Amino acid sequence: MLNSRMRRTRTPLLAVAGAALAALALTACDSGTGTQDEGAAKHSPSATTSEGTPNANQPSADAKGGQDGTGAKDGAGSGTSSTGRASAKQSSAGTHRGSSGSGSGSGGASEPWDPANRVLCNGSNTRVTAQLQSRPLNHMLLTVTNTGSKYCDLTYYPVLRFDGMQWAPQADESTHPQAVTTLAPGKSGYAEVRLSAADGSGDGGTTGRRLTVYFQGKTPQSDGGATANPTLPAKGVYYDSSLEVTYWQSDLSGISSW
View (cartoon, rainbow, N blue to C red):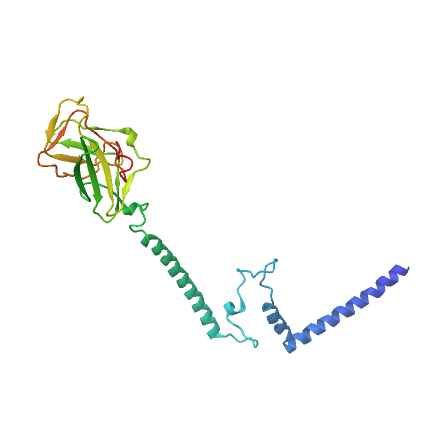
């Protein structure tokens, strides 16, 4: 009995409350206060993520058109924002191009690892000399100087040919360096040549008048390019079947006692 009375009492109260709210809403629409509240909500700090940091996907009031407190659009503000974004893009692109340019432009004689800065050493970019040695006996020193503007690689060992000889001397494998001998512009590399056996054990001894130095490529016995013809003494150079060479070296310390 009590419950049915409460239900009959609640229904008229809700109806009255709903009518009052409707009347207030009509009054707000007539006065314009409702649209002002919506505008304030748009400018509230709702453009943040749940962590409280700015949301990059939510445009700011300036990006939407720069509305001021009166609701009027600020055309100048909108133009400045667009120009600012365009300038930022141009600045970013310029910085990226500048960084790329400095990376490629820095490749010079100081960067031997740059493929554009590396070539093979051969007769076209070096000066080769041959000098007889008093010690060790019956030895000759080959010196190759880089005359080019790039680093060059002296690969493996020199392949020698005196006059029209039909065989090539072998290299002493114990002189194989740990890395390819690379010459900076103006720098020199070396190889020793044992012309004949000191004990006379070699055979077929003869005198060479002209020497041709062949350079190897990136694989053994491949063609490395132009040959060189270093000047020999006027009396020529005596050699026999024990003729042997060392690998190219960046300094003389490794072959000074060979």
